[in-house]
Image (cartoon, rainbow over all chains, first blue to last red; front, side, top):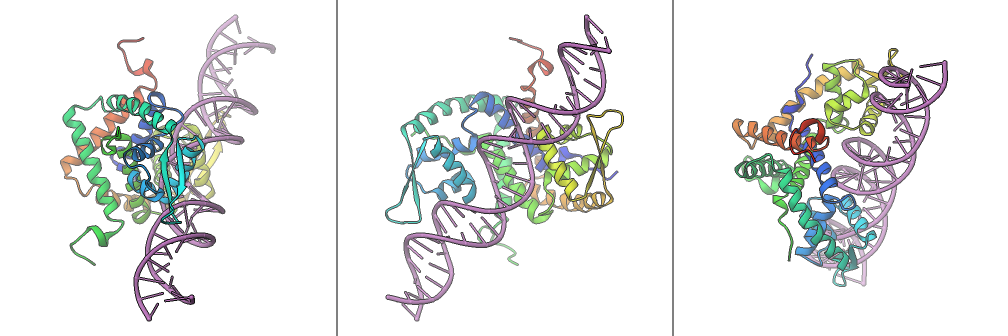
Length: 155
Length: 155
DNA sequence: AATAAATAGTCAGTGTCCTGATTAATGGGT
DNA sequence: ACCCATTAATCAGGACACTGACTATTTATT
């Protein structure tokens, strides 16, 4: 019986947390637009005309995934994609009016959902929640390119 | 500019956390066996002969997903699936010898990975990390079947 | 025993998410 | 101007994860 208790496995916890979020998102925000899709819309509200790769970087998606997400948003006519005349490799992205409307609507619902989602935690605990998750994620991502972020004990 | 700061969105954080974990898992544990697959193996070490649905419940996967994961484990010959003679709907699951070996091997690596993953947090912070994530996840899942868990303000 | 409700599993469809290989365009070095 | 490394995007392939519809079996009801 060398079985492990999964509740002490951060990977398992992370997966459950995302599933819980997905559930709440579907019921309280939208069944059409997903959370990553909203993140893309949100990024383009803040910085219109960004290229695909940079949007992916902002929301934390690799080139392949961001391409799929964007193609779905274009199919729904929430987004426009135009070749950059300055750089023929890039596509520049802009929200359509419908995209802006959708973003506004979902922003309100998302705020409500986050309140419910974080409801079980006190305000202080919510800060800790953000801080801990962010520190763990940042550290793990830092291990990806050890040369860039770290400055000590270079092997 | 009604754009939102994604770092205060638990859904975004949850996704990043899982991505970070996925990255570390791939480099430190296995490129063949995934974290959910390991969770299934682990469950069947603790409780051999469980049926598919119950395994899914233990590791937090719905019937469709657990079916796919299990079919992959069977294809890799880490698992056996036999009809329950008592109940013709069920399949009973058992690890093969190879499955047990794989579980033992990955258990060691997983422990190492978890140490690295949680490295940025003190022991006290790690407890808080587990507690907060679990409370949020449990609460959100509780909203799924309101009749069962909750006892107040029934609409 | 026939019917109905519940349950286990499958299947179709959609949407993340990743890696690795490929294509097209840019820009530096010679 | 030509070669080459870099970079943006696509494509193929695989894995998770959900919902909703379906099949087969069991169990409860009548």
